[in-house]
Length: 446
Ligand code: NDP
Ligand code: HSE
Image 1 (cartoon, rainbow, N blue to C red):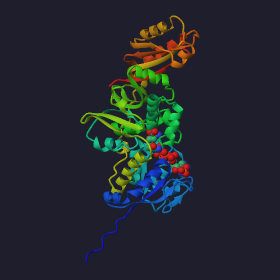
Image 2 (spheres, rainbow, N blue to C red; image 1 turned 180 degrees about the vertical axis):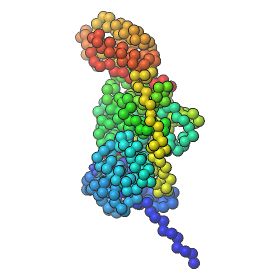
Image 3 (cartoon, helix red, strand yellow; image 1 turned 120 degrees about the vertical axis):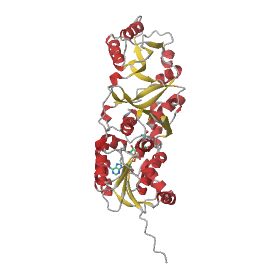
Image 4 (cartoon, rainbow, N blue to C red; image 1 turned 45 degrees about the vertical axis):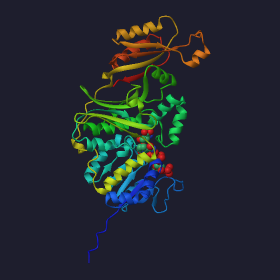
């Protein structure tokens, strides 16, 4: 007679948020239950869920799950071991629920980069105190396993730079505007319909979502405390079809990049639209795809490319974390105890050096363009090219250029500092030769 096998305890999961990501997670956990149980050595069982509207059709059968109207009540439910937060938002119910779960020693899996960028350190400290896991692979770059890569696979490296396309919505919008000539608004609507955009898409298009992800990845890459407030943030809402056409003519593509770099003066963190050479690897990354390049001393240059948003890819990353929790293989959230993460030294954006694309709306009168060039020369800025070109619509309206309407003038500079450029543009503006704020797009050369 054999002794009865000890009962294998399932991991009891509560999911808060059943939108694009939450519904996909519940669906996959259900469909792949046997495979996951085999891979983790124990079953993973969703026992309870929470969302706002109990009657909404989500394409999943909710009959077997206990329902909670309040995610905080779900987080403190004694019948769950792992709380999966897919509600969103840096504060409010998502934060209260995650704090409640961690304080009770329950493991937490979240895709919420806004929450982590704002409160990641305090939540990690709480997790350290109670011995709970706080896992967030899905928070950055959707289905790309970049959190694990930085925290685990690159443990033997010193990272000097990390950069990439970290927002699927923006890359989708820019790609379709460029290749299909669609409007910004139409592309954004499609991104929302496909489940790529944040509940408030301003977070996507104004660069804040990329900044949240960059804040998390910078901490993991450099072993520093999260410093989201240090990030220089610009979004893509000011990019016009004219800029995209000019970029194409000049051999570039425009991408929204997040960049974190160790410089001589400290860590530079910036998010902004960037001109990249059309022939570069990053320029080939189109649509909702994300890419993250990491420069590190031992491995060299490593690039990870994959789907950056959407239910399936994000759920894939969430489930990887749940599987780690089930196996009991989750380490410290940021790879080190919070007390041992360094306080980062900030490198001011004014010190940033690089080339620039500058579009100015210049008064159509003799000497205006020459005066602008003189201001650039006075600031020690060398120009690689200068192009004066009206938009097709303006040329069609006024073929002879008699209206005196401002003409777009595009300058491409050689490397200069942000401070020199801003000083020169302030003088150009004060001279009265331009009628709109200049459009400035940084150029990143590989
Ligand atoms: P959705 O807006 O699609 O879903 C949010 C869910 O949260 C909904 O089910 C909603 O309920 C529920 N919810 C909202 N407020 C409350 C509340 N006060 N109480 C209870 N439930 C609430 O968001 P996503 O699924 O797109 O995103 C979820 C998280 O994942 C966010 O943090 C997001 O940043 C992150 N993320 C999203 C990605 C994506 O591609 N979509 C990719 C990576 C991360 P109801 O359905 O009833 O309205
Ligand atoms: N709104 C985000 C994006 C979701 O478009 O990248 C993935 O984090």
